[in-house]
Image (tube, rainbow, N blue to C red; front, side, top):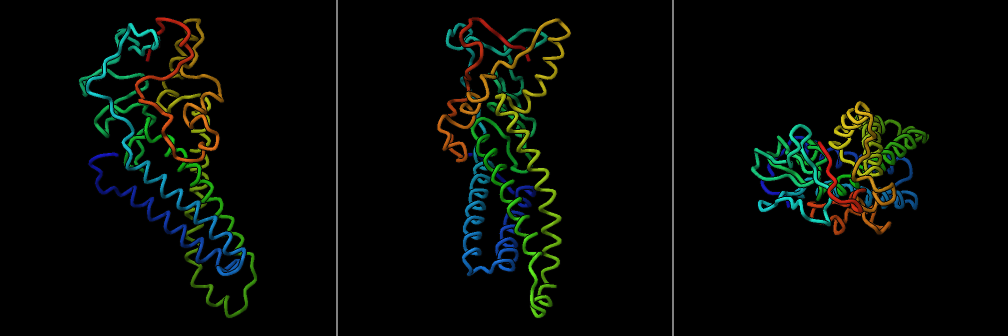
Length: 284
């Protein structure tokens, strides 16, 4: 688990947003559309509550799980035949070494200026979880985003549906008190649906190519340099769409929607497209 967690305003905002969306969806949208005690009301409440609980759990895992620390004893073994690829610096050709942490960097590890340490398979530092998204919590983060998109779209549908119902006059008068809740929910849900859907699509793209956000931006530059030199650049960790999915989400398809992490390994070594070659290296 992550150590030294302290109060974070963005995390508090996310937590309050989750609870607000849940209570407004269940006790206003579902209640006013179906009635909580009706069969459709109970069904929608159970489904939405299950999605909300998964969101809360995966969000907590993303926040409190250490994304992956580089062992103080780590040192790359350039003579290891089972690990033929080594990441080297573009200018000097030396193995990557972090001057701030005083140790070598494993493949795909990067130094986070916010966390002030190197993170295994670092994707990015996310202020909304007050933590890095890295090797150990990437899947939980992805699952959270996926269920958050489902929850927001589900809530938005229930919001719109509850507005289509014709209420008796006495209920219309009492319904005026809910007007502010509808306005706040709409202003919250619509931007969230758009932003989270874009984020989900982006990470689906990254997973299908077995890239991190950092590796994507590095790959753009590497591709430009390769084309400039008359070469063709290929991402060394791209094993094909299905293999990439299994490396990130697990070999069991049923586990792809669950925040399990037993399949991820140590984070110090990753299968590459060059595993059948020898002495390969990639520059960064």
